[in-house]
Length: 462
Image 1: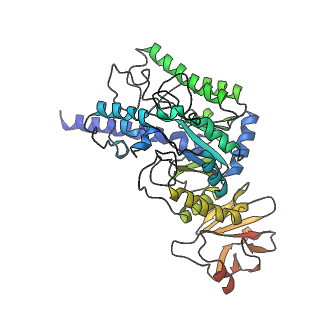
Image 2: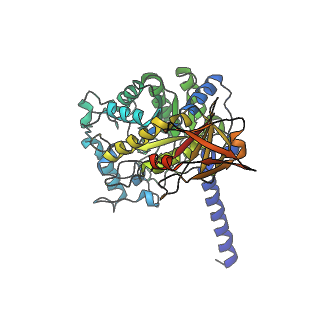
Image 3: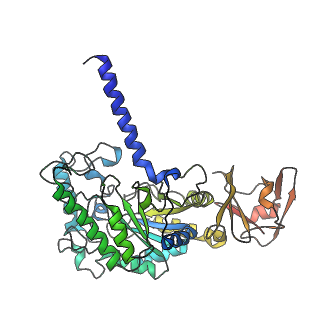
């Protein structure tokens, strides 16, 4: 093969790779692709959801027993998050068999979703998105279309009164007035109609030619349709359907129509799918650099992994609070993930982080809930939001900054028509002066002393 042909082939490969990466981000990140829903019930639900700002996500399944990444270790792709470990790692087929056999030992007897809901409510969270089924195909609810599920006789936990985990989770969070969302993976690596055992799987996609075997692909479409129909029919009011796995090109239009016939106004997020079925954008593990004038939500792990990993590294509450403030100022919501362990309990650090976030929210939550971003949104260490009657100026300190500086400067337009400033959590009046092109907020020494070590200081101007 001569050099010109090699260069041409390499160019084609690079082009296809770039196209894949762009499409993989696609709708999840790009506000230019967003299409506003036309259904007034969906628009009303979206507006309600945007006011909530802060939600809880949970990735959980039998994989927690191994402490490995959810699903991905059975995907035959070579990425850092698909690496196999343990005694079966050297053989894909033996590994997948052992992974799926985790169903027979999954018995999370410490499962107590009321405790989770209490902790999430105390932290100031307002909605929940639970993984009813991830890519591995294991259903955390009582589906009649698969025996690979939490309620199967093959699963020890099936004899527990709380065995229909999804139903019990939703009930616990409804009691705390949470908006309820169901995560559902469109691909299913356990299904014979997605990864047909006649062929070895090559990547995350279906492993056969859909054109050559249309009946098999039609069965898989029906399987997904029927499973989603179970969720929207048997699990109470749902406000969110959070679809993952964009590489499974299914007929989501018909699923959306069916879902809204059962759950009028339900928000549908077909991540990276056709824009009409992406009611809000979902950047993953990242925050957009600038304000986005469309509904969006960053989904972020509290620890390093989406699923339970022993001795995982947890982000600090200071970081998480600053992240929430940053996101809200840019017009987004934060969906923060916690991965329950194999016994059905959270890591103690998850409760600790939520408790610390809650303490901050009790004082400063009015700068978060129901607010709208205010230009210039984010500048230097400042984030700006507004309510009907007030403007909130949130100061995000550097890592080693433990007290407020004696003078703070903000853009002049922030105080347009406002006459007084107060520091949330402090009862005294805060003085400010107008300069040529900015406002200076004066922080007395006693205020600096009384308000030490805050993740974010919030000033209210009204």
